[in-house]
Image (cartoon, rainbow, N blue to C red; front, side):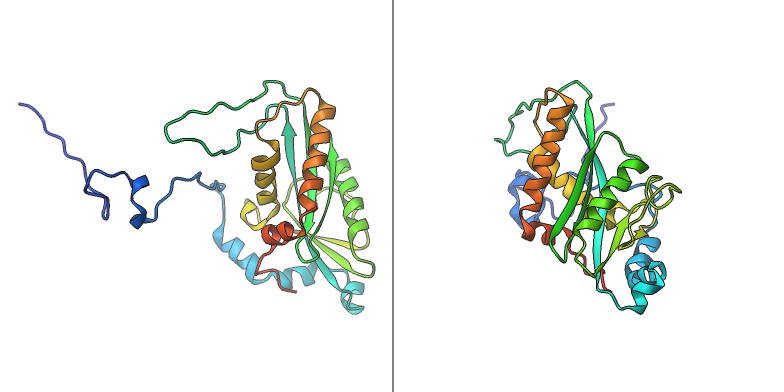
Length: 241
């Protein structure tokens, strides 16, 4: 007996032989999914956003509150950039398979970056590794960018070289606030890294570690030269103090 097979239909699917790509009334597009960690705690993230002001006040030194110093909110993170780089998106004809250069060598550097969306500025260092020593250098650079008489609230994740390290040296005008675990969605620096990978780091072949470092510096300087871009990427409505 010959078996028959029928395909189930999707509600609203085109019935005239057209593909979804050719069906504008469905408002569908093919895109890369945004990853999230399986241990993500949505309740913890929502609580962090809802209670952001209280969380910050609990971490601030007494003299900052007592003296009523103006506060700046900064977001911090780091990203590895290396010879074995990223294949970025590009426009191409439908059905084509465009080629893109990708190195097989593994020299890499780490950008420690931070932005203050309100003031539309950034601060970064390029280091050979992600560790407490590198974080201390980044904190010095951030501290120097804080407006005179102001205090910076530096939002960062719980990496071991951040607030958890006993060897970290936090400048007097900076207070660290740690994000909930597994919550990169709350840190706009993650979007900054993706933006740089798409626009500066993709399809590149660097001859040496020095070339990687130079590319990191050039990319960061290009990014922070556009104040409106910093505000657009970094602005979050739940950042209320």
